[in-house]
Image 1 (tube, rainbow, N blue to C red):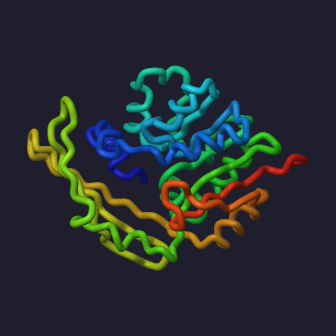
Image 2 (image 1 turned 120 degrees about the vertical axis):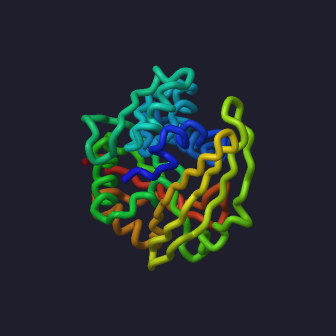
Length: 244
């Protein structure tokens, strides 16, 4: 299932404008430089922001995402022809051999089904060349980030050229063990249309993620702090063994 904020054409079209600060991607650009990655697979590429940043640096990029509306937004952006876009998921990729695979922002946590998570990790593994790396982030459950997801702390009014003012806010609707469900509400002032998007994230413990990676053949090379959210997230750096 694709969340409405990614799959609804009207919401996908304003996604970037509602979340314009993507400085969180700077760390991933540095990772690409660190590993001298010339071929990158961006899993959960969304509207293509990171993929296009890489393409600007002459990196050969494949962006994959199951949300057709988001991929359509990505394909319409300047320079999009430099990226290979795939509407789908990491479990059904064509044969690839990349240096680096990434899951930025909430992508890893948005894969809540255990089988889907295993298939995603396996798909990333098979897409990597021997010695290639998978890098992704996930929030530390101990920090209970969802306690800050409420209307009072998230309400915003954003004026978007050609669209008008869009009100938005988020509220948690359920917490069941490691699963946190929340609802974004969007109000378009132009015609008073109200759209909502329900999402669920899985908050995995560090040892759980390390075990899942090892089960798919990865070697966990490092677990780092997130540069943009120090002390709040784990950044996993996993490697496909050189001799595999």
